[in-house]
Image (cartoon, rainbow over all chains, first blue to last red; front, side, top):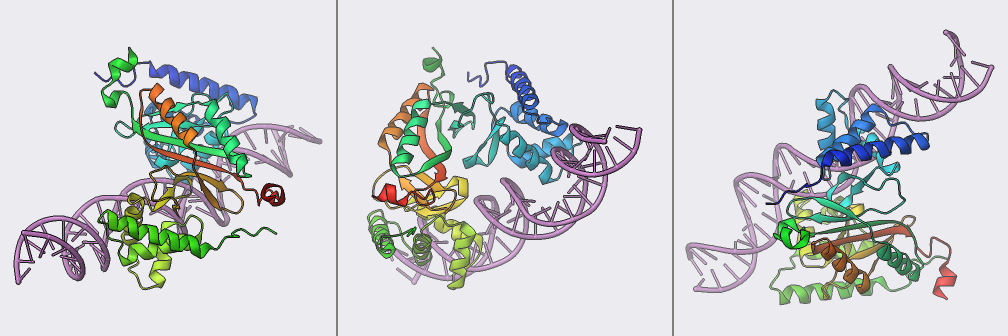
Length: 161
Length: 161
DNA sequence: ACTAATTTTGTTATGGTATAACAAGTCTAA
DNA sequence: TTAGACTTGTTATACCATAACAAAATTAGT
């Protein structure tokens, strides 16, 4: 009985879009139609979406369907902190904490391919310290963990209690 | 006066190759010509090498020059733990600790593109614990940090004392 | 409103990364 | 020496990403 998304996912999308509009307004950025729709589609997929998957969806809706269109939208959304790229999947994921400065740390299920973003200040601090030990000034972090999620381990009951 | 590689890099290569042969022997794996040469070339570059860069080098030496050749060699070397893939660069790097079970954590300089592999058991343990909190069973970790290395910060003296 | 400057989008072409599928060759052990 | 397993050759293709330049839309100053 692995109900993957027990929450009302529409709420995620609505919140994310509202946040996006607020942030863009504050920063004098323009959340144009294609950018907005790209963000919605990424959220709707609820898991990392490849650039060309996104392109196909946009094309279905009558948007221009050449790669630069989607990569520009992705660049914009990433710069705005509204999405993250999952490097190990070459795919893009909506960020639920776009309003807070942070790094994207991910747990990726090998089985169902769901991805959970998590935050861990301790690890961030440790990494900065470790880098400094090597004389290194940290700028960006790619932290992507794979394995089996609770559902796919068949541990839904124990974990959800 | 940024001497990037003060050590004798030939030693790295020799050691790596010797380790590779020992490991393969132990595990009944065959370090064939193309695999061996691929490993050497990766080590010789001393920084992450793209699959097609490697392919070009192999082709120069008369090896078959179709992509599957190099990807097969890379897969073999990765499975054997002899190299790591740097996901954020789509490039491959020799592993200096192939004989020890470990995860590849990397510090990547944005400026000179040198990459340093580092080990940090504390972080590994923290990540396992954090994953477990989410009911997640960890299998692999991609930890890739970018920034400025000591040399590129112009801090060679301070750090090297 | 008009125009210049800026930003965004359209379009074509190309480069870079990776794998599928199947044939042929090589090694190993019974 | 032959079967089986593993490795390599070969062709084709799929997927990921950006360069370069033209056209359109938006914004700000007048």
